[in-house]
Image (cartoon, rainbow, N blue to C red; front, side, top):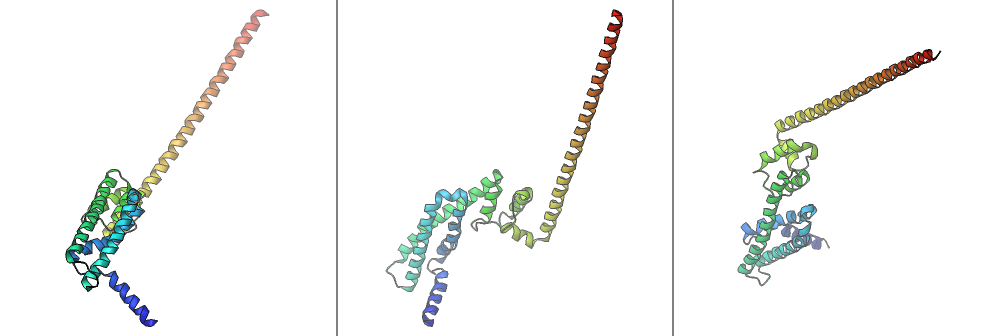
Amino acid sequence: MRNFFLILLFSTLLFAQNPRAFAALGDVIFNNADKIEKLKDIDEYKIYDKKIDKYVADVKKAKKDGFALVNGSKNITKLEYLNELRKLAKTNDFFVRSVDAFYESSKKEQNSRLFSQIINSGLFDTKEHKKEIINYYFAHQEDMNTTGVIQSYLDEDAKLRAKREAQQRRIKSKKEREAERIRRIREEDKRQKERLEKRLQEELQKKKEEIREYQKEELSKTI
């Protein structure tokens, strides 16, 4: 029984690696497969659910074929395996390009939810766009959390953390100033309302007195 579990463990660890044949092409496909499968968690990719499921299944099959080719345990030629990888590479490239496109559209539309999901997908070149990502975060941090890529940037750069804290203080101060401004406006509105009511009351009282004086004068004429 112990030997069985050792063999199973060894097989699992072995399969966790990639086939050596055409590794330059295969590694990209095999390493991206899990990331592409997780795109199903993004709303914009729901229409690709079936395509992603089929692709992931095809990648798993290709990985088995690759190991079989290397081990010589399956009747598959190098050309057949290479063609299999080339076909998968086209789908891989499609999803990588789509991630780049969604990144650009999320910036343009200021869709912070999609922006965060894309940069954390593992399929987007965050190093190349680091400055862009940081600038977007500081411009929209009230709508975003720092999970993933952004948090790693904040953790590795003390200056960024200091900038973030300073900006958060400014945001808080801005909110406090806005609250104070609203309070003053409301108090001034209340005072103006009270002054208006007082003036109307005085005018009404004055009018009543004028009417009484007029009535007195008219009454005196009849006596």
